[in-house]
Amino acid sequence: MRARLHITGTLAPVDERLFSSFIEHMGRAVYTGIYEPGHPSADAAGFRGDVAELIRPLGLSHIRYPGGNFLSGYHWQDGIGPKERRPVRPELAWFALEPNQVGTDEFLQWCERMEIRPMLGVNLGTGTPRDAVELLEYVNGDLPSYWAQKRRENGREAPYGVKLWCLGNEMDGPWQICAKTAQEYARIACETAKMMKWLDPSIELVACGSSYRAMPGFGSWEKTVLEHCYPYIDYISLHQYYTNHEGDVPSFLARPLEMEDSIREIAALCDEAKAAQGGSRDIHLSFDEWNVWYHYEQEGKEPPRWTVARPIHEEAYDDVDPLVTGAMMNALLRHADRVKIACLAQLVNVIAPIMTQPGGPARVQSIYYPFLLASRYGRGAALITEAEVPCYDCAVRSAVPYLDCAAVEGGDGSLNFFLVNRAEEAMELNLELPRAFAAGEHRILRGLSLVSASCALRDGSAQALLPPRSWSMLRLTVRPAPGEIYN
Ligand code: AHR
Image (cartoon, rainbow, N blue to C red; front, top):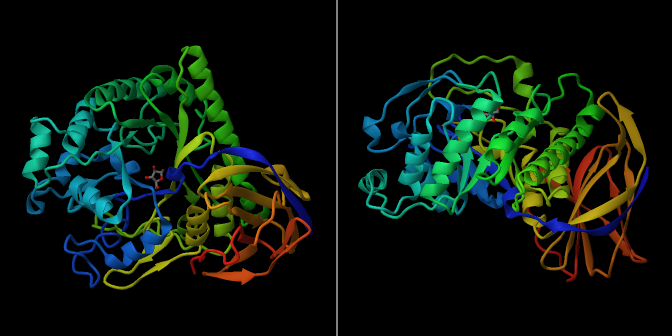
């Protein structure tokens, strides 16, 4: 199969927050994931050094915390102060025991050590607007006020200065603790947002959109939320996980195109709200949960309930999954003008690129690599490309191009193409170049390795062979020696 690709324009700068992830108090994400006092690699605060070493190369901008569904039952005051006095609680989102040994201070200080910024959520399930504002006061307060003083008493003098906050999580979902109707959520989100911005006008707020595209209220939920919250929020969230229970790979590979439909539709609703309210600010999108998630469910495991670090949703990714997550990342890059934040959900042990053994080693999974290289080489200006490539029809969509591509021009003048070949046969790619380049490098994901392949530069174009059903990156640089690619 042959494909021709060329660049037709520049879309927008890529917001570095597109390369963010998510840690929830869920399964073994926190306990025996990032945090395991007594592990041979643990630091003085009990956080695993081996896990940190696998997270660092991802160059994460933000980590969303503490949930997820966990957020809607979380009383943040349980997680501060002397650890021995913190309560152990039954955790209703995931039927586990929450020991509260990691809380706001531990997480925020770990983020500081990791040089990753936090994106914190406030509980709008069992929580009140007052709880939310008090958490903000605890975290960012610099007044001689009660909660800021409590933070100081707990050993942290300087405010943390957290800028990005989520107003609840998936509040439309019947699975959510204290789920809400659109009206109910819109009202509480609006009032919470007002108070939070009065206390700290420097923050940015993300309101909950629908939990996923197939929710019955998709679109109408966002309309209601935007109608009430437009003046007070900065972003609205989208979430999406893809499954392949049917074993229908062509459809699975096509799913990320639906993600783009969602982005376009929700962005249009944001623009409608702006016009209706005569506003001057754009509401942008925070795609703050995205991934592949179905293997664990298919295995039908049900670990005993009410334990600490209950090992749930430990998804084992295969060789097709990184093509889907790679295409999802591409979809985000192709909409860099509207999507400003995106979190690969999650980071460690739970639907995650990084897995740990309690007391043992940590390792990465296949989905680690497309994210890693996009984060490393996908910063700069998102480009618009056009491809001449055959298409296919499948159960979920028609006219699916066999080639999926996102392109970014780096600040160093490089051109970086992230490519998914959806076809069962190899694809000869001919890439028209807008100018001369000194070197081209092609890296293909094979299992857990990035294999080098040839990239020929001639007659103003680059040629590469994309293996059947593969994810790869093509990188053209202005200097002869291409930058080191992670391996
Ligand atoms: O990321 C796992 C869960 O998926 C989150 O807790 C929830 O927000 C979503 O349904």
